[in-house]
Length: 128
Image 1 (cartoon, rainbow, N blue to C red):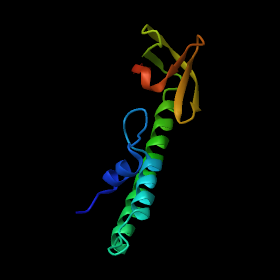
Image 2 (cartoon, one colour; image 1 turned 120 degrees about the vertical axis):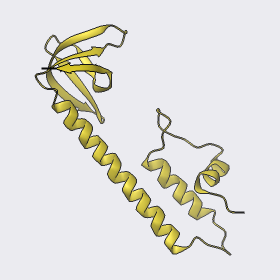
Image 3 (cartoon, rainbow, N blue to C red; image 1 turned 135 degrees about the horizontal axis):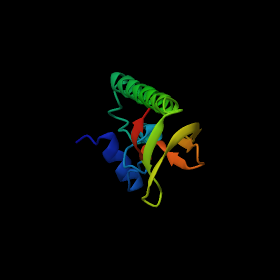
């Protein structure tokens, strides 16, 4: 009976970790791959083609994450000078013109003309 990478990682550590949104990131994938290699059956090692396929998957995952990050940054910069409506931390509706965009740890933050700070994920509407 073969144990998949996720099952093997869960067996060896007792858990499968993910990011705050419940999705696995590239570090989780790399941990699973190295754990799978560490605990593979020495009499029946992983096939080279399987290893190359998993490394290709890792490379694709990393490239997709980089593209997503670049797209998010581009999306936030496109809001400069535009009027937005967003939900504030306390649940209130914030409306204002975007004056500055800061990318803080891959999380775009919009600073409005009145000094309000809004995360890109909280934007509900964008107008001219």
